[in-house]
Amino acid sequence: MQFGSDNQTGASQKVLDKIASANDGHTHGYGDDQWTKAACDKIREVFETDATIFFVASGTAANSLALASLVKPWETILCHHQAHILIDESTAPEFFSGGARQVPVTKEAGKIQSSHLENYFSQAGTDTPHNTIPKALSIAQANESGLVYSPDELTLLAKIANQHQVKLHMDGARFANAVAASGATPAEMSWKAGVDVLSLGATKCGCLAAEAVIFFDRELATDFEHRRKRSGHLLSKGRLFASQFLGWLEDDHWLELASHANQHAAALAQQLEQLSDVRLAWPAQANEVLAIMPTPMSKRLEEAGAEFYSWYQQSLPPNEQLSTNESLIRLVTSFKTNMDEVNNFIGIAKNG
Image (cartoon, rainbow, N blue to C red; front, side):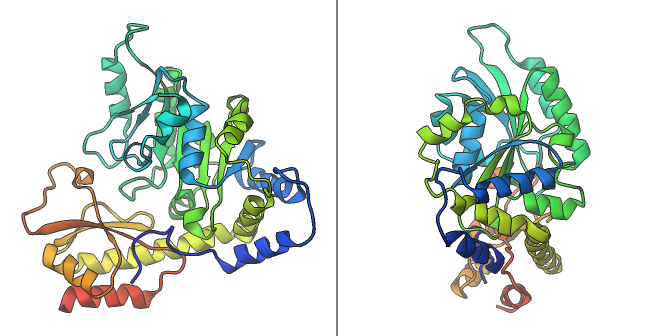
């Protein structure tokens, strides 16, 4: 019963097969190879645009290097109060940007809404050089509460950001899950909605260590090759990244993997909601389920071998509080999750 994280699974067989194919023979290094060219072309095809693309090994590097391309050290990055870049990436964004501050614009909401941005800008100081100047807005998709931004929501946020000369970055660690859940195209969920830079994560959805930074606003990529090299993320055998993305994207394999994870999360959430003493903190819109349950039940599940995380109480919705004997847990499904795991988990929760 593995619900700890979707980065705890291995790679899909199609991705492994593509790595094995790329392993044969010799090719130039540092991304100057046919695999990298083919992978970049495939990404452009999938997103229906002529973007500038770079590969790195981790989501932290993808997010931090992308954001460093958008802000100067004395500028700020607006984000959700539970944003991964704020809570779970230590101070990497500050490190790579030379000190740019991250500023949450929400307190309890599940998603950043237009009203949050409007409220922030209406109150933000503009006394230069004393006040910090926001230059980037970072949004996770799917986000920290397991929720998915619609293209219309993204478009509205991008419009407000653009009015204030703020660039829109998307942390797409679970972008595949969001696309699969929404029914929108990758283009509609990104640059067509106003996203300037996307950190496209494949590691959580069937790859080993493969992330892409996609600049839809190509001018923003001017110095990225130097940032990547300086950070140690320019691999000599760049085909390792590229081959994974080729295997991942071909024949919509990435969406097949994401849909599998989403479907099992939906099944898990549906069965949890049928338990009288369990409630969902947020709707399960992608492959994450945030559930509130009696603490003895969560301990019983852990003792039976279920793996999941106790989650931050600050991520609870407005007006939702835990009683003294309740726990908030996060369950994440992956492309390898099966219904036996779901049913076993529910059986233990229900019957002890």
